[in-house]
Image (cartoon, rainbow, N blue to C red; front, side, top):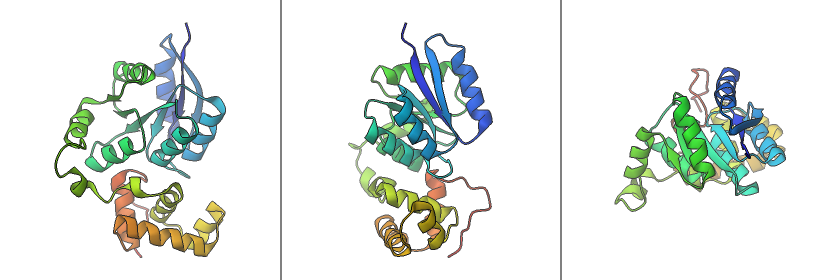
Length: 226
């Protein structure tokens, strides 16, 4: 029997260990790798080509939503299941726009996680019941959805998503330029485009938005000042 190969991406070691233990009890799963940040998740996915990636949203270096976009761009056949502790509208919307095939609570039961992996591997979508309910309400055919949810992260390019995350993490333009390997003027240009697309024109607003979208965690240490 060919086993379903799984890559675990979460910045908390205890969470990865829990999922690994859970999946290794099942005969049809094989955990092939673990990543503690989004960039590592993308690199390992390209290297290992797993069938399914369990992807946390809030991770250092690159958030899970952008990591999902990059994984699927490189490997369209891979199935990504987003893991979250929240089910608000912004997270559901941005996760589905990223191309994720599933969306589960981290607190989901072993049965639900295993079922979700098997379902997405078969080409289906899989959502926790509470998330599925929100997803139905946010379906494109429902009136008012576009007006209510725009602007959204789906309008941002990969580089703009990276800049938004770094802004929310309190990085100055010089730090962002060094981390991304681009010039300061280029960073400023990307920052301007992010503000324009999201219609948010200050650092505090961008930080709050990034927290609400789940791409960074609200640890109480994030810079929320201009």
